[in-house]
Length: 162
Image 1 (cartoon, rainbow, N blue to C red):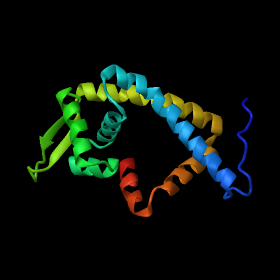
Image 2 (cartoon, rainbow, N blue to C red):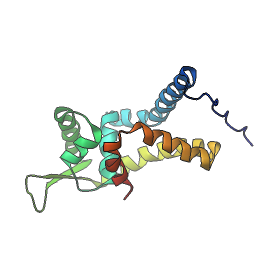
Image 3 (cartoon, helix red, strand yellow):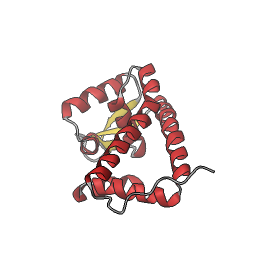
Image 4 (cartoon, helix red, strand yellow):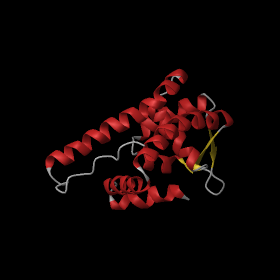
């Protein structure tokens, strides 16, 4: 059995503890995203493409404006990403049923297969880390990450859980 992770100092709001958290967040995210970088590179895609695929997979028929809000990037950047994903037949774009000006996004079969492959690499890393840390630590980790999200944006994030 692995040794329990070190607990935070009771002085967890001091600079050394905050810096430790920033470092762990940086390196943890760096290694997590590296898990999918090879798969993306093999497709000639980048992390922005992955984020678009991920969120469209989570909410089929999401509008372009909803995706723009989730990713918090410029229209121009998202346009480039979506054009490439549609050209490669990974995302299908169609007009809205009630408002034909809306552009609804959905993964194609190839897009679903790629997103599943990339998610599996993330799932393996996170599952191992979750198992090592334990259920209580996972809840605490989620609480910290949720605390980083501004209150006005939390409903949008919660909407992904549906």
